[in-house]
Structure formats: structure tokens, C-alpha cells
Image 1 (tube, rainbow, N blue to C red):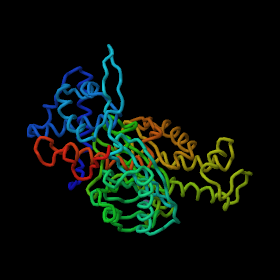
Image 2: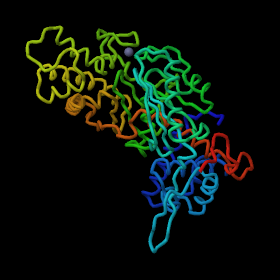
Image 3: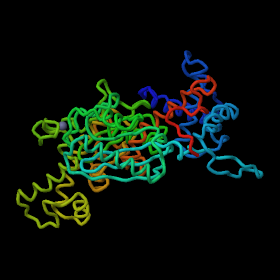
Image 4: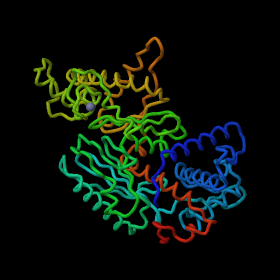
Length: 453
Ligand SMILES: [Zn+2]
């Protein structure tokens, strides 16, 4: 389990799926001989294995015939690749389906008794931990609460206790956990697992991956929440087979996972996607990053609540059902009833949200934007108002009427997103093992696999 997930893995999968899609559109049989000239037999097998595993991962349990059809590989190739994985009980026959003239086809699924990943989503006052199988199914979950600004060590301790609870509850031993994905908002370098700044948590330069790995002894991947969600959307959600889209998380801050040409954008410093600190107005409100007038200082959750409270400080003329302590849900409900304060707050916030979205659209030209996070869930009227503004904008050069879509119900949850990064990495590990090379063969129970049924 030594090597790190190359940034390229995600790109390779998207690339392979793209080729499959193109090929099936043209009804061309394909054996993946086409890509890089330098790719030898070994690499071809690795890529084909990765593709088949990824098809089971993203589309759920499948028959071998179905996998052959969808991958464009011959049934014999599919069988040759999958048989060692079945023998090692990484894949199991989930059920039999009757196809055609009484023929029974076995449906292959990941063995969630033997291999699962754990997703840990760290938020301001709560961490949620789930066991997630390699197809993205949540098997069980639990959570722990803590006061805001709790020290990283203590949060890690609470998360590990949650994980132990889940393992005990599901009779899994640590060997069955293929890896732990941790999603967290802030400036995160996912290559090193360093949390440079999580200003809303009050964390600075925390070696979060090391903190988890020291205690766990399994691979850990720390990922920015927005990027984790974009990955989960690409594998299990509305971003499947899409090469250019954005996943925007709006909560205590604003962060994005940006997929460009089938590759998640990380940037030179590994922190790409922090669009919340895009400057909107230098005379604007103070931001947690230390500057003024960032996008999230105008329209993330705390900024909207501050705007609402300010209306009362300013001495509002109209009566309102709201008060300075009202929540975003209250605001949303009041807006639906045409409350004058709610209308002012929503419309002002929506103008800022739209302004930033236009910047993002100009920069990345996405096919669509997926919106997720507490503000999106609690205050849909804000999203609708921003959509109206953007839809009405037409500059000299373009229309901004690109789809703003709610994130997937399942893939956009923090714990599933957290597990996505480590799940991809694990498939890569599996694909790289060569059952014919004698070492370390899959049938010989490679490190981290449990032989439990
Ligand atoms: Zn900022």
C-alpha cells in the first residue's frame, strides 16, 4: 500500500471512460490498445483492470457480460482479469440473474465484508464517520460533536472512536479497512495531507494525515471538501463521464472542486479550488483569511446571517417574522411568505453569489455547476434568486445561462465524498497487483485484505 495516489489516476479513469463512451457511440469494438505507445502489456492489463473495477464501482454490481459490453473488452479478457479478484474474494457473486433462455448470470459486487473504506467528514462542531463500500454504498455511520475550535488531536481522537464503534458494530477488523478518506474545508494540500489553514476551525499547519496514519496503520488521504465532492460526483453522481464541471460547496465558507478536461484541478501548491477567497470588493467585510471582501465574506452562511442581523441593528422599518438569531431555514421560509427583511437579505446575498459565479464561469467555462452544502440545502431561495440574476445576464460575448444544478443526494454527502478519494486509490492498488507475477499475488492475501467471507 506504499504509493501515493497519482493525480493522474483520476484523469486516467475519466479518460478511459471517455474513450468507451466515444467508442460505443460509434459502435466500435475496443481493446484499449490505442492509448500511449509506451504502454506495455503490463500497463495495458493495469488499465483494463482499473477500468473494469471502476465500472463496478460507478455502476454497481454487474455481470461479466455486462462489463464486457460496457468496457468494449472481450469476454475472455474480462474473465481473465476478474477471476483472480473473485478467487481472492475481493469480488463476490452477489446474486444470480436470469438472462434470456433460462441462463443464469452471476452478478459481481465488491465484497463489503472483506474490504470497505471509511469516510470522515470534519466540520466546525461535528465529525461524521461512515463505512462505505467500494461502490459508494454507506454501510453504517455515526458522528461525534465537539465545541468549535477544538484542537486537531481531540477531533482525530473522536473520529477514531467513531470508527472503532463502527468496526465493532459491523464485526469488521481493522484489516478490512482499505483506507480512510478525510474531507475538511480549508486550504488543504492533498498530496501531503497538510491542513495549511482551516480558518473556520481555527487550525493552522496541521499534519492531519500523519495524525490519522500514526494511529490507524492504514492509508489515509486528506482532501479538501469541495474537491472530494467533485470526485464523488465524478464517480457516483451527476459528474459521471463529464470532463468539465464544477462542484461548489457553500457552507461556513465557499470552496470548489474543479474538473477540467477530466482532471481535478489542484494547482501548483495543491490547494486549487479555493474560489471563496476570490476578491469581490476590497472595501467589503473582513474575511477569515485575513483579507477583506472575499466572495465567501459576502455570501457564505455566516455572512448571510450577519447581513440579516445587521438589518435589525440598522432599525428596520417593516415588521418581520425574523430576528437577529434566525437561521437560514427561517430566512428561507420567511422569503417564501414575502417577508420584507427576508427579501432584502436574499436579494442582496444573491447578487454577490451571482457576481462570483460569473467570475468562475468566465475562468473555467464549465458545462454545469453542481451546488452543495448547508447554505444550498437550507436556503434554496437564495440559489433560485442567483439563478435568475445569472440567467438574465448577457454580456457582449456570451450568455451566462449555464445549468446550476443541485449536487447528487448521495455523492454530495461529506462522508461519501471523503471515501471517494481513498476508494479511487485503492482500486489503483488492486489494478497494479499482478496475479501472474507470483508476488504479491491477489490469491495470497495481499496486505490489508482480510480473508473473512
Ligand atoms: Zn478570504
